[in-house]
Amino acid sequence: MKRQTVRGVLAMAPEGYARPQKAAGQRARTELPWWASGAVVLGLTMGLAMLDAVVLYPVLNAALTQSSWMGKVTCVGIAAVLNILPLVMAHYCHLQIYRLDPGAWRLVLAALLAFLLLFAGTVVLRVAYADLYGQAQDGTLVNVMEETEGDGLADDGKADATVFLLCCEPLATSILAFCLAYILDDPVKRRCNWLRVRRVQLREARADLLACRQELQKDISDHELFTLDDQLYAAKRKEVQGRLDQLMARSRYLLARHLHDPAAISVVTRDAEAAGLSPM
Image (cartoon, rainbow, N blue to C red):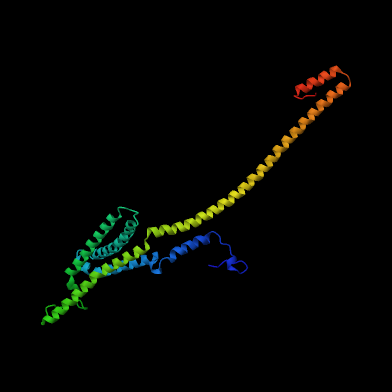
């Protein structure tokens, strides 16, 4: 993105409306590390779910012999549920901690119970098919009944260690998914970040409204001044016209009196009284 400058000086560039909002969004993103961003957490969650599916597939493929695709679909579904339930628990844990939802603990317990049941089922299944992990690379089973008891115990120990590791693997990935979701999915922090951006937007809107109000007040003031000038002009003109009529009536009365014409005086007086003037 090309930076806008004024005569080569970046500081003289206009601030505009987009830059404060962008700065508020960048401040919200700098509060979290790069590995806690939404895209990274989503990618890690999908990767952990695929890892659980790959680890669980050999056992389910051996256990579900009814169909070839049943083991694949089941292992993908179980792996997805084991990694989605921690996300749900992390969200409702925040709601319960901040007292935003008084009944959130019920959902946390329900999700935790479902996770423990499913995880316990995978552990029991791996223990039941522990002999799968004692196979040789060519596909033939290793004979655990060796001539010496020490070799048999060693093979059993290797199989148990493999089963234990594979049982811990989905638990570790689920805990990692829960931690990432707990760090990222914070409703209070998300609301605060939204309020920061919204505050910048409202400040900009307030500045626009104040500027518009000043312009409107200026226009209204000019209009009121012109109207007041017209009213004052009409009032002064009426006053001057009244004085002129008064002077004309007075002059006619004096002229008729000077001519010693009683009839003319009566006519002037009658006309002045009809016009609401006093010639006297």
